[in-house]
Length: 461
Image (cartoon, helix red, strand yellow):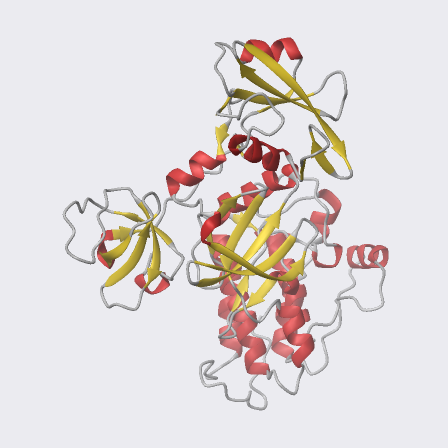
Protein backbone atom coordinates (compact mmCIF):
# COMPACT_ATOMS: atom_id res chain seq x y z
CA UNK A 1 0.00 0.00 0.00
CA UNK A 2 1.38 3.41 -0.90
CA UNK A 3 2.18 5.61 2.08
CA UNK A 4 -0.11 8.36 0.80
CA UNK A 5 -3.16 6.15 1.34
CA UNK A 6 -2.62 5.70 5.08
CA UNK A 7 -5.07 7.74 7.13
CA UNK A 8 -6.13 8.12 10.75
CA UNK A 9 -8.31 5.16 11.70
CA UNK A 10 -6.55 2.79 9.27
CA UNK A 11 -5.39 -0.47 10.80
CA UNK A 12 -1.99 -1.87 9.89
CA UNK A 13 0.32 -4.71 10.89
CA UNK A 14 3.77 -4.46 12.50
CA UNK A 15 6.51 -5.91 10.27
CA UNK A 16 8.86 -6.82 13.13
CA UNK A 17 9.55 -6.55 16.87
CA UNK A 18 10.29 -3.35 18.79
CA UNK A 19 10.80 -4.44 22.40
CA UNK A 20 12.90 -1.57 23.79
CA UNK A 21 11.08 1.62 22.83
CA UNK A 22 12.54 5.05 23.52
CA UNK A 23 10.46 7.72 25.19
CA UNK A 24 7.29 8.35 23.16
CA UNK A 25 7.69 5.19 21.06
CA UNK A 26 5.42 2.15 21.14
CA UNK A 27 6.53 -1.38 22.01
CA UNK A 28 5.19 -4.03 19.65
CA UNK A 29 5.79 -7.50 18.22
CA UNK A 30 5.76 -8.71 14.64
CA UNK A 31 2.18 -9.27 13.49
CA UNK A 32 0.58 -6.98 16.09
CA UNK A 33 -2.42 -5.01 14.81
CA UNK A 34 -2.06 -1.25 15.22
CA UNK A 35 -4.47 1.59 14.46
CA UNK A 36 -3.09 4.82 13.04
CA UNK A 37 -4.07 7.84 15.14
CA UNK A 38 -2.02 10.63 13.54
CA UNK A 39 0.04 10.86 10.33
CA UNK A 40 1.29 14.45 10.67
CA UNK A 41 4.86 13.56 11.81
CA UNK A 42 7.12 12.99 8.81
CA UNK A 43 8.42 9.41 8.63
CA UNK A 44 6.44 8.34 11.70
CA UNK A 45 2.88 7.56 12.76
CA UNK A 46 1.22 7.85 16.12
CA UNK A 47 -0.48 4.48 16.55
CA UNK A 48 -2.64 2.71 19.11
CA UNK A 49 -1.97 -0.93 19.94
CA UNK A 50 -5.20 -2.86 19.39
CA UNK A 51 -4.52 -5.31 22.23
CA UNK A 52 -2.94 -3.14 24.94
CA UNK A 53 -4.59 0.17 24.05
CA UNK A 54 -1.22 1.93 24.43
CA UNK A 55 -0.28 4.76 22.07
CA UNK A 56 3.11 5.81 20.74
CA UNK A 57 5.27 6.56 17.72
CA UNK A 58 6.30 4.01 15.11
CA UNK A 59 8.48 4.36 12.03
CA UNK A 60 6.18 4.41 8.99
CA UNK A 61 8.44 1.88 7.26
CA UNK A 62 7.76 -0.66 10.02
CA UNK A 63 4.10 -1.29 9.19
CA UNK A 64 2.37 -3.04 6.29
CA UNK A 65 -1.17 -3.31 5.06
CA UNK A 66 -3.52 -5.89 6.50
CA UNK A 67 -4.08 -9.23 4.83
CA UNK A 68 -7.19 -9.56 2.74
CA UNK A 69 -9.78 -12.03 4.00
CA UNK A 70 -10.11 -15.15 1.90
CA UNK A 71 -13.54 -15.55 0.31
CA UNK A 72 -14.80 -18.50 2.33
CA UNK A 73 -18.44 -19.68 2.40
CA UNK A 74 -17.73 -21.29 5.79
CA UNK A 75 -16.94 -17.94 7.41
CA UNK A 76 -19.82 -17.35 9.82
CA UNK A 77 -21.00 -14.57 12.10
CA UNK A 78 -22.84 -17.29 14.05
CA UNK A 79 -20.56 -20.36 14.21
CA UNK A 80 -22.51 -21.44 17.31
CA UNK A 81 -25.74 -21.79 15.24
CA UNK A 82 -26.31 -25.46 14.36
CA UNK A 83 -29.52 -25.20 12.36
CA UNK A 84 -32.41 -27.61 12.81
CA UNK A 85 -31.26 -30.29 15.26
CA UNK A 86 -33.10 -32.06 18.08
CA UNK A 87 -32.65 -31.52 21.82
CA UNK A 88 -30.87 -34.88 22.31
CA UNK A 89 -28.53 -34.05 19.40
CA UNK A 90 -27.69 -30.74 21.06
CA UNK A 91 -26.92 -32.54 24.34
CA UNK A 92 -24.53 -34.87 22.50
CA UNK A 93 -22.78 -31.97 20.85
CA UNK A 94 -22.28 -30.23 24.22
CA UNK A 95 -20.23 -33.12 25.61
CA UNK A 96 -18.02 -33.30 27.54
CA UNK A 97 -20.12 -31.05 29.76
CA UNK A 98 -18.46 -27.78 30.63
CA UNK A 99 -20.08 -24.80 32.38
CA UNK A 100 -20.93 -22.07 29.89
CA UNK A 101 -20.52 -24.24 26.76
CA UNK A 102 -23.43 -23.36 24.46
CA UNK A 103 -25.03 -23.56 21.03
CA UNK A 104 -28.18 -22.29 19.36
CA UNK A 105 -30.45 -24.52 17.31
CA UNK A 106 -33.68 -24.15 15.38
CA UNK A 107 -36.58 -25.76 17.23
CA UNK A 108 -38.04 -28.91 15.68
CA UNK A 109 -41.10 -28.81 17.93
CA UNK A 110 -41.74 -25.09 17.27
CA UNK A 111 -40.59 -24.41 13.65
CA UNK A 112 -39.27 -20.86 13.22
CA UNK A 113 -38.32 -20.52 16.88
CA UNK A 114 -34.80 -20.94 18.22
CA UNK A 115 -33.46 -22.72 21.30
CA UNK A 116 -30.42 -21.67 23.33
CA UNK A 117 -28.75 -24.77 24.79
CA UNK A 118 -26.33 -24.21 27.67
CA UNK A 119 -24.21 -26.68 29.64
CA UNK A 120 -24.19 -26.04 33.41
CA UNK A 121 -23.44 -28.29 36.42
CA UNK A 122 -23.09 -31.37 34.20
CA UNK A 123 -26.42 -31.03 32.42
CA UNK A 124 -27.79 -29.10 29.42
CA UNK A 125 -30.54 -26.51 29.88
CA UNK A 126 -32.71 -25.58 26.87
CA UNK A 127 -34.13 -22.04 26.63
CA UNK A 128 -36.78 -21.42 24.00
CA UNK A 129 -36.20 -18.15 22.15
CA UNK A 130 -39.53 -16.54 21.27
CA UNK A 131 -40.05 -14.22 18.29
CA UNK A 132 -42.26 -11.34 19.46
CA UNK A 133 -42.91 -7.86 17.97
CA UNK A 134 -40.03 -8.31 15.49
CA UNK A 135 -37.62 -9.05 18.34
CA UNK A 136 -36.31 -12.10 20.20
CA UNK A 137 -36.74 -12.84 23.88
CA UNK A 138 -36.24 -15.68 26.35
CA UNK A 139 -37.97 -14.20 29.39
CA UNK A 140 -40.27 -11.42 28.04
CA UNK A 141 -38.03 -8.98 29.90
CA UNK A 142 -34.92 -8.63 27.77
CA UNK A 143 -35.45 -8.18 23.99
CA UNK A 144 -32.94 -8.50 21.15
CA UNK A 145 -32.82 -7.53 17.48
CA UNK A 146 -31.18 -10.79 16.48
CA UNK A 147 -29.34 -13.89 17.71
CA UNK A 148 -25.96 -12.14 17.52
CA UNK A 149 -27.29 -9.42 19.83
CA UNK A 150 -28.69 -12.04 22.24
CA UNK A 151 -25.50 -14.11 22.44
CA UNK A 152 -23.43 -10.96 22.95
CA UNK A 153 -25.64 -9.93 25.88
CA UNK A 154 -25.64 -13.31 27.64
CA UNK A 155 -21.87 -13.65 27.16
CA UNK A 156 -21.49 -10.60 29.41
CA UNK A 157 -24.58 -10.88 31.62
CA UNK A 158 -26.09 -13.93 33.32
CA UNK A 159 -29.54 -12.37 33.13
CA UNK A 160 -32.32 -14.95 33.44
CA UNK A 161 -30.26 -17.97 32.33
CA UNK A 162 -28.32 -20.36 34.58
CA UNK A 163 -24.83 -19.13 33.65
CA UNK A 164 -23.12 -16.65 31.37
CA UNK A 165 -22.21 -18.01 27.95
CA UNK A 166 -18.49 -18.74 28.10
CA UNK A 167 -17.60 -20.98 25.18
CA UNK A 168 -19.41 -21.43 21.86
CA UNK A 169 -19.73 -24.95 20.48
CA UNK A 170 -18.79 -24.29 16.89
CA UNK A 171 -20.70 -26.06 14.15
CA UNK A 172 -18.43 -28.43 12.29
CA UNK A 173 -17.01 -26.89 9.13
CA UNK A 174 -17.65 -23.25 10.09
CA UNK A 175 -15.07 -20.60 10.91
CA UNK A 176 -15.69 -17.77 13.32
CA UNK A 177 -15.87 -14.47 11.45
CA UNK A 178 -14.92 -12.67 14.67
CA UNK A 179 -11.72 -14.72 15.01
CA UNK A 180 -10.75 -14.34 11.34
CA UNK A 181 -11.50 -10.60 11.28
CA UNK A 182 -9.48 -10.12 14.45
CA UNK A 183 -6.50 -12.15 13.16
CA UNK A 184 -6.28 -10.16 9.94
CA UNK A 185 -6.83 -6.79 11.61
CA UNK A 186 -10.21 -5.93 10.12
CA UNK A 187 -12.14 -6.10 13.41
CA UNK A 188 -12.68 -2.64 14.89
CA UNK A 189 -13.48 -1.75 18.49
CA UNK A 190 -16.99 -0.40 19.15
CA UNK A 191 -15.64 1.70 22.04
CA UNK A 192 -13.64 3.81 19.55
CA UNK A 193 -16.70 4.58 17.42
CA UNK A 194 -18.93 7.63 17.92
CA UNK A 195 -22.12 7.48 15.87
CA UNK A 196 -23.60 10.70 14.51
CA UNK A 197 -26.62 11.48 12.39
CA UNK A 198 -28.46 9.10 10.09
CA UNK A 199 -27.38 9.89 6.51
CA UNK A 200 -29.29 7.20 4.66
CA UNK A 201 -31.77 4.35 4.85
CA UNK A 202 -31.11 1.34 2.63
CA UNK A 203 -33.11 -1.78 1.98
CA UNK A 204 -31.01 -3.67 4.53
CA UNK A 205 -30.30 -1.09 7.21
CA UNK A 206 -29.37 2.47 8.10
CA UNK A 207 -26.18 4.37 7.30
CA UNK A 208 -24.76 6.79 9.86
CA UNK A 209 -22.05 9.39 9.85
CA UNK A 210 -19.55 8.79 12.63
CA UNK A 211 -16.03 9.18 13.91
CA UNK A 212 -13.54 6.39 14.47
CA UNK A 213 -10.31 7.34 16.23
CA UNK A 214 -10.29 10.85 14.81
CA UNK A 215 -11.43 9.97 11.29
CA UNK A 216 -14.87 10.80 9.89
CA UNK A 217 -16.48 7.59 8.71
CA UNK A 218 -19.69 6.14 7.31
CA UNK A 219 -21.20 3.18 9.17
CA UNK A 220 -23.63 0.77 7.51
CA UNK A 221 -25.57 -1.06 10.22
CA UNK A 222 -27.22 -4.41 9.49
CA UNK A 223 -29.28 -5.97 12.26
CA UNK A 224 -30.89 -8.96 10.53
CA UNK A 225 -28.75 -12.10 11.09
CA UNK A 226 -29.30 -13.54 7.62
CA UNK A 227 -28.63 -10.24 5.86
CA UNK A 228 -25.57 -9.59 8.03
CA UNK A 229 -24.20 -13.00 7.06
CA UNK A 230 -24.73 -12.17 3.38
CA UNK A 231 -23.02 -8.80 3.76
CA UNK A 232 -20.06 -10.53 5.38
CA UNK A 233 -19.21 -11.69 1.86
CA UNK A 234 -19.32 -8.04 0.70
CA UNK A 235 -16.85 -7.20 3.45
CA UNK A 236 -14.59 -10.09 2.46
CA UNK A 237 -14.46 -8.80 -1.11
CA UNK A 238 -13.78 -5.22 0.05
CA UNK A 239 -10.70 -6.29 2.07
CA UNK A 240 -9.04 -7.25 -1.23
CA UNK A 241 -9.65 -3.93 -2.96
CA UNK A 242 -7.51 -0.81 -2.84
CA UNK A 243 -8.14 1.86 -5.48
CA UNK A 244 -8.63 5.62 -5.45
CA UNK A 245 -12.03 5.26 -7.17
CA UNK A 246 -13.47 2.61 -4.85
CA UNK A 247 -14.89 3.49 -1.43
CA UNK A 248 -12.33 2.28 1.12
CA UNK A 249 -13.22 -0.19 3.84
CA UNK A 250 -11.76 0.67 7.25
CA UNK A 251 -13.05 -2.38 9.06
CA UNK A 252 -15.96 -4.18 10.66
CA UNK A 253 -17.59 -3.99 14.09
CA UNK A 254 -19.58 -6.93 15.46
CA UNK A 255 -22.01 -5.44 17.96
CA UNK A 256 -25.76 -6.08 17.90
CA UNK A 257 -25.37 -7.19 14.31
CA UNK A 258 -22.83 -6.10 11.71
CA UNK A 259 -21.39 -2.61 11.22
CA UNK A 260 -19.40 -1.98 8.04
CA UNK A 261 -17.14 1.07 8.51
CA UNK A 262 -15.92 2.94 5.42
CA UNK A 263 -14.41 6.31 4.61
CA UNK A 264 -17.03 9.08 4.65
CA UNK A 265 -18.00 10.50 1.26
CA UNK A 266 -19.17 13.95 2.29
CA UNK A 267 -21.01 14.96 -0.89
CA UNK A 268 -23.34 11.97 -0.97
CA UNK A 269 -24.30 9.87 -3.95
CA UNK A 270 -23.74 11.00 -7.51
CA UNK A 271 -27.38 11.08 -8.61
CA UNK A 272 -28.35 13.48 -5.80
CA UNK A 273 -25.15 15.50 -6.29
CA UNK A 274 -26.09 16.14 -9.93
CA UNK A 275 -29.79 16.75 -9.31
CA UNK A 276 -29.20 19.33 -6.57
CA UNK A 277 -26.57 21.30 -8.50
CA UNK A 278 -27.55 21.07 -12.14
CA UNK A 279 -26.07 22.61 -15.27
CA UNK A 280 -25.41 26.03 -13.76
CA UNK A 281 -22.95 24.57 -11.23
CA UNK A 282 -21.54 21.39 -12.82
CA UNK A 283 -19.96 21.84 -16.25
CA UNK A 284 -19.18 19.19 -18.84
CA UNK A 285 -15.55 18.95 -17.66
CA UNK A 286 -16.73 17.83 -14.20
CA UNK A 287 -19.20 15.38 -15.77
CA UNK A 288 -16.36 13.87 -17.74
CA UNK A 289 -14.24 13.61 -14.58
CA UNK A 290 -17.03 11.65 -12.89
CA UNK A 291 -17.32 9.36 -15.93
CA UNK A 292 -13.58 8.69 -15.91
CA UNK A 293 -13.48 8.17 -12.13
CA UNK A 294 -16.15 5.48 -12.33
CA UNK A 295 -14.53 3.93 -15.40
CA UNK A 296 -11.19 3.65 -13.59
CA UNK A 297 -12.78 2.09 -10.51
CA UNK A 298 -14.68 -0.41 -12.66
CA UNK A 299 -11.55 -1.14 -14.70
CA UNK A 300 -9.84 -2.11 -11.45
CA UNK A 301 -12.72 -4.45 -10.55
CA UNK A 302 -12.54 -5.89 -14.08
CA UNK A 303 -8.81 -6.58 -13.62
CA UNK A 304 -9.67 -8.51 -10.44
CA UNK A 305 -12.34 -10.52 -12.30
CA UNK A 306 -15.04 -9.03 -10.07
CA UNK A 307 -18.51 -8.09 -11.23
CA UNK A 308 -20.42 -5.32 -9.44
CA UNK A 309 -23.93 -6.14 -10.79
CA UNK A 310 -25.56 -3.00 -9.37
CA UNK A 311 -23.63 -0.18 -11.01
CA UNK A 312 -25.74 3.01 -11.04
CA UNK A 313 -25.30 6.66 -10.08
CA UNK A 314 -26.98 5.98 -6.72
CA UNK A 315 -24.11 3.58 -5.93
CA UNK A 316 -21.38 6.07 -6.81
CA UNK A 317 -20.37 8.40 -3.96
CA UNK A 318 -18.67 11.80 -4.17
CA UNK A 319 -15.80 12.76 -1.87
CA UNK A 320 -15.05 16.16 -0.41
CA UNK A 321 -12.63 16.85 -3.29
CA UNK A 322 -15.35 15.84 -5.81
CA UNK A 323 -13.69 12.53 -6.72
CA UNK A 324 -16.29 9.88 -7.57
CA UNK A 325 -15.90 6.42 -6.03
CA UNK A 326 -17.83 3.22 -6.71
CA UNK A 327 -19.58 1.82 -3.64
CA UNK A 328 -22.10 -0.79 -2.54
CA UNK A 329 -20.51 -4.11 -3.27
CA UNK A 330 -23.51 -5.99 -1.85
CA UNK A 331 -23.98 -7.84 -5.13
CA UNK A 332 -20.30 -8.12 -6.12
CA UNK A 333 -19.27 -11.63 -7.07
CA UNK A 334 -16.48 -13.35 -8.93
CA UNK A 335 -16.99 -13.29 -12.69
CA UNK A 336 -18.28 -16.86 -12.97
CA UNK A 337 -21.12 -16.12 -15.40
CA UNK A 338 -23.36 -18.34 -13.29
CA UNK A 339 -27.06 -17.71 -12.67
CA UNK A 340 -27.84 -16.17 -9.30
CA UNK A 341 -31.29 -15.22 -8.08
CA UNK A 342 -31.16 -11.62 -6.93
CA UNK A 343 -33.51 -8.68 -7.01
CA UNK A 344 -32.45 -6.96 -10.22
CA UNK A 345 -32.35 -3.20 -10.90
CA UNK A 346 -34.13 -3.57 -14.25
CA UNK A 347 -33.32 -0.20 -15.83
CA UNK A 348 -29.59 -0.73 -15.31
CA UNK A 349 -29.37 -4.46 -16.06
CA UNK A 350 -28.16 -5.92 -19.37
CA UNK A 351 -30.65 -7.99 -21.42
CA UNK A 352 -28.76 -11.29 -20.93
CA UNK A 353 -28.70 -10.71 -17.17
CA UNK A 354 -32.44 -9.98 -17.10
CA UNK A 355 -33.32 -12.94 -19.28
CA UNK A 356 -30.83 -15.62 -18.23
CA UNK A 357 -29.26 -14.05 -15.13
CA UNK A 358 -25.83 -14.19 -16.78
CA UNK A 359 -23.61 -11.60 -15.12
CA UNK A 360 -20.14 -10.66 -16.31
CA UNK A 361 -17.95 -7.59 -16.69
CA UNK A 362 -19.81 -7.10 -19.98
CA UNK A 363 -23.12 -6.73 -18.13
CA UNK A 364 -21.38 -4.16 -15.91
CA UNK A 365 -20.36 -2.31 -19.09
CA UNK A 366 -24.04 -2.14 -20.11
CA UNK A 367 -24.85 -0.65 -16.68
CA UNK A 368 -22.00 1.82 -17.13
CA UNK A 369 -23.67 3.02 -20.34
CA UNK A 370 -26.84 3.74 -18.36
CA UNK A 371 -24.75 5.48 -15.68
CA UNK A 372 -23.18 7.68 -18.39
CA UNK A 373 -26.73 8.62 -19.44
CA UNK A 374 -27.52 9.51 -15.80
CA UNK A 375 -24.39 11.66 -15.54
CA UNK A 376 -24.97 13.64 -18.72
CA UNK A 377 -28.69 14.08 -17.99
CA UNK A 378 -27.77 15.52 -14.57
CA UNK A 379 -29.32 12.67 -12.60
CA UNK A 380 -32.55 12.04 -14.49
CA UNK A 381 -34.25 8.68 -14.08
CA UNK A 382 -33.33 6.45 -17.07
CA UNK A 383 -36.09 5.46 -19.53
CA UNK A 384 -38.31 8.39 -18.49
CA UNK A 385 -42.06 7.70 -18.34
CA UNK A 386 -41.59 3.99 -19.11
CA UNK A 387 -42.75 1.20 -16.83
CA UNK A 388 -40.33 -1.57 -15.87
CA UNK A 389 -42.31 -3.99 -18.04
CA UNK A 390 -41.98 -1.64 -21.03
CA UNK A 391 -38.25 -1.23 -20.44
CA UNK A 392 -37.68 -5.01 -20.45
CA UNK A 393 -39.75 -5.59 -23.57
CA UNK A 394 -38.51 -2.62 -25.60
CA UNK A 395 -34.82 -3.01 -24.76
CA UNK A 396 -35.01 -6.69 -25.67
CA UNK A 397 -36.57 -5.56 -28.97
CA UNK A 398 -33.64 -3.24 -29.72
CA UNK A 399 -34.80 0.09 -28.24
CA UNK A 400 -32.06 2.37 -26.87
CA UNK A 401 -32.45 5.69 -25.07
CA UNK A 402 -31.92 8.92 -26.97
CA UNK A 403 -29.01 11.16 -26.00
CA UNK A 404 -29.62 13.47 -23.03
CA UNK A 405 -30.04 17.16 -23.82
CA UNK A 406 -26.71 18.81 -24.81
CA UNK A 407 -24.85 15.51 -24.42
CA UNK A 408 -21.61 15.53 -26.46
CA UNK A 409 -22.02 13.22 -29.49
CA UNK A 410 -18.87 11.27 -28.61
CA UNK A 411 -20.18 10.44 -25.15
CA UNK A 412 -23.50 9.27 -26.59
CA UNK A 413 -21.56 7.06 -29.03
CA UNK A 414 -19.90 5.44 -26.02
CA UNK A 415 -23.30 4.82 -24.42
CA UNK A 416 -24.49 3.10 -27.59
CA UNK A 417 -21.46 0.84 -27.81
CA UNK A 418 -22.00 -0.14 -24.13
CA UNK A 419 -25.57 -1.12 -25.11
CA UNK A 420 -24.66 -3.60 -27.85
CA UNK A 421 -27.06 -6.54 -27.68
CA UNK A 422 -24.26 -9.12 -27.85
CA UNK A 423 -22.06 -8.90 -24.74
CA UNK A 424 -18.87 -9.77 -26.66
CA UNK A 425 -19.30 -6.67 -28.82
CA UNK A 426 -19.21 -4.35 -25.82
CA UNK A 427 -15.83 -2.79 -24.95
CA UNK A 428 -13.79 -3.47 -21.82
CA UNK A 429 -13.55 -0.75 -19.16
CA UNK A 430 -9.90 -0.36 -20.12
CA UNK A 431 -10.95 0.39 -23.71
CA UNK A 432 -13.73 2.71 -22.54
CA UNK A 433 -11.25 4.71 -20.52
CA UNK A 434 -9.01 5.07 -23.57
CA UNK A 435 -11.97 6.23 -25.66
CA UNK A 436 -13.08 8.75 -23.05
CA UNK A 437 -9.59 10.21 -22.82
CA UNK A 438 -9.29 10.21 -26.61
CA UNK A 439 -12.57 12.09 -26.88
CA UNK A 440 -11.22 14.88 -24.72
CA UNK A 441 -8.44 15.58 -27.22
CA UNK A 442 -5.99 18.00 -25.63
CA UNK A 443 -8.45 19.08 -22.94
CA UNK A 444 -6.68 19.08 -19.57
CA UNK A 445 -8.87 17.50 -16.92
CA UNK A 446 -6.91 19.21 -14.15
CA UNK A 447 -7.62 22.80 -15.17
CA UNK A 448 -11.35 22.91 -14.55
CA UNK A 449 -11.64 24.87 -17.81
CA UNK A 450 -14.79 24.81 -19.90
CA UNK A 451 -15.11 22.32 -22.74
CA UNK A 452 -14.18 23.97 -26.00
CA UNK A 453 -16.63 23.98 -28.88
CA UNK A 454 -16.37 20.92 -31.11
CA UNK A 455 -14.00 18.96 -28.87
CA UNK A 456 -16.45 16.04 -28.86
CA UNK A 457 -17.12 16.03 -32.61
CA UNK A 458 -15.89 12.53 -33.44
CA UNK A 459 -17.40 9.35 -32.05
CA UNK A 460 -14.02 7.70 -31.46
CA UNK A 461 -15.76 4.34 -31.46
